[in-house]
Length: 271
Length: 271
Image (cartoon, rainbow over all chains, first blue to last red; front, side, top):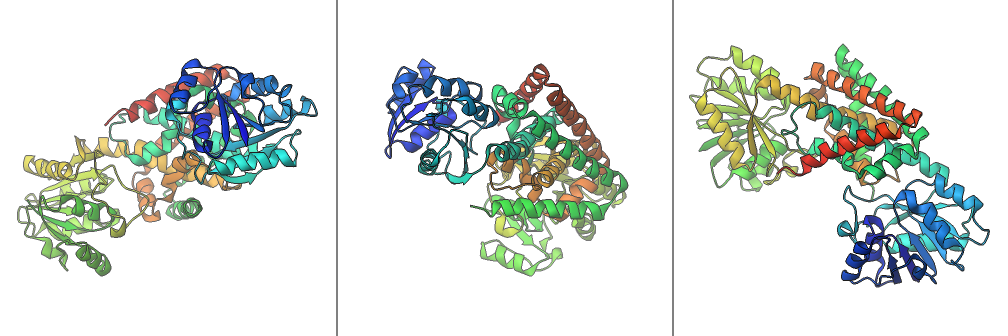
């Protein structure tokens, strides 16, 4: 496939490194230094967004806040190219797709992978290996668009799952916004004392607090209703735990922790 | 040094693997299969607790609930051996030390390391490499006891810090009980939906929920006041985040997430 790539940060850069060889790639980034880094890494880079076309598909991997504008800039000259965006929230893309020209082909492919690092320097061809890669149709997706998105996700090493936009964004409230909020809140509380004795457990629990601020704000505020609802649920859970501690309710705590352990361990047993 | 080791699970077994070669070790575990596994790994094992003596030091690395009983079983025949226990909560050991014979030498050395795995099969000579190793005096610690505990912690690869028992247990409320409670609560909430799309961020945030149940119950209930207080603080923080989401307060969220990011990244810059 002839694939254009718009955005060569952590996600776009990692996709480029994962897909090269198997596909004919052209890579664009709005930042000249990023383009230069991609070029030095041996990628075929172009100096304008338009030059990623013509292509069978263009992957839009810009920062979340630029995804819709980039799709809009591409859609009139796409000439059949499937526009595949990696946006981690689907509602804004979905709204755009509904008003996009009827010939437009737009589909989401959101990898559940990443790191708190960012930029091409952190890109890694193995970033998506065995990670969920969520293919999410829009009002401008058809069978070919879905197939192209799935092919790209699989070629990058991901495990493809198809979700509707609303199911996707609800899942992100639970699996992305909630742990981010929990990590940030735990960091704020822990920072009231000395962090020098912190071990790997604390570090893992709070790792998402190191997420780049722009992305973190969007993951929460761009999905505000779902995020607030999930945070309210976790507050209720934590209130139950605190009450059990005050009451010395060993039976409750044991059962609560056993159930959480079983769920969490089952997750480790998945591919 | 001639060192006895009582308990060859994850922590004791890892200590044995880390210290052998540099020290003359004798390893005991109450479980015959564990002793056999340690023997097959080339460790010098003994079949009774008493046979770890005579020694310069005995490291007590039993499950948390057995530490005081093991210290009590050793103290009368210790004959000058420093008893070093790795208990992750100091209050019970401290209370015991205050009533122990005046000739007893008891000191805590708690490694901030571990994994959600357990048992000798999970033991790893590198488990303590560059991790905090908290040396905590009791009423039966003297200069020699402190020095012995520090030597053992350093020989295992840890970074030694000396804390009082009360400072230690307060720190564990923030850095151990709190993330454990948060991980378990987040797991319970997330399990209301499909976990298949979970990525590495969710997995890291909830990893501690897979802690063995006995240990998890003790880390919370054995430190109930501190744990409940820290959980109450994190509930307050999460309430602030949820309110900002409902109000669309981008400025608050940006500053909140920026401050958390700065704290969390500073932790990554430490050794």
